[in-house]
Image (cartoon, rainbow over all chains, first blue to last red; front, side, top):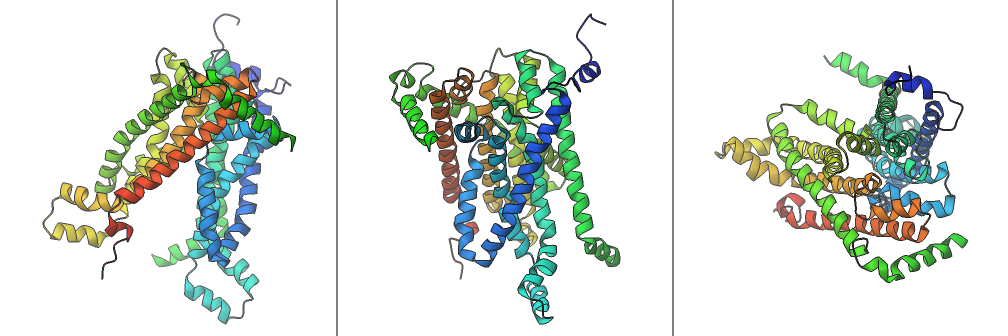
Length: 226
Length: 230
């Protein structure tokens, strides 16, 4: 057994659950936390901000301008600058990723609500919907496809971006890349890339599924239309 | 607010020390390197992506390439790709690092060029054919100017990506401003980390502004609606 470098499967088996913080299993859990929290947070913050931008139009220009600037900031220096505030913790990775996510989601929410046809909105008013019910039961459901398209972009890019955090010791599966570079060895790199891409694909697939469940009328209409 | 005063004292230390302003590790040299690597990768990416996007958008063939590359570029971790190429090809030249930089910056330009060409009003396209222009002429004289805002948007998104990835690439031995951050972090030289980070952020903002200006200057007034047609 001891001769030659281990195959990729042997390496995975040996490192999957070593009980140490850098076992593949622990890195995977960290990775999930550091990507899912910013995705959720970005959505939770972007929804009301997007709504506010639709309600008060003058807000949108400065908000999207600011978010464009945020989006242009490279992640690594932002992590580094945050270290002096939040330390070498997962928060240091989570905060910037949340902002990147908001930069994509706020325009998506605004565009999504903008995609509600005027006659639909007027019908809702005519049927006696209060503004809140109109928003929750008519406008938001119609905005779902556009918002979810944005969320898919955010999910996939957050999952891959977490790995840069490895350069400050908080990168989830990205830790496999730094380990492989310090001690030149290919299997960890392959495992890291494959797992990250797989996570991204799963997240993307779940969001596509969510869209189907949230907008059942799209399929019904397609079926009738043919 | 202790971190704020520490922040400024680190900045002062970094920008105030004369040895940071000269020689191969000095700020001017590192800035030039960062510009050189980013520009090289971006130009190579544009040379691949713009023609490809024009052809795919115009002919409608190979649209799968656009969709797959866009998703893959978002999902692939940059650090992993960099480490993989360096382990595969060695670190004797800058190319093992430049290749992944180019690969990652092709898709944004490709997608937006394709979308730009695809999104041109079919009536406009037909009118151009009706006026007797041929396929290639329609593409270059009508479709490209109309699609230019999106093509430039793609280039801007790619530039953002490339500046960030060049920073990360310092980890695998590439020069540029990322060196201050990576080396400073390794040796706990926080003045270097903070100073380098601020430089990179400023660099990224300047690039962003330059691209926005380029968009204003090069887009035809008719397309950007700055010219009112009565």
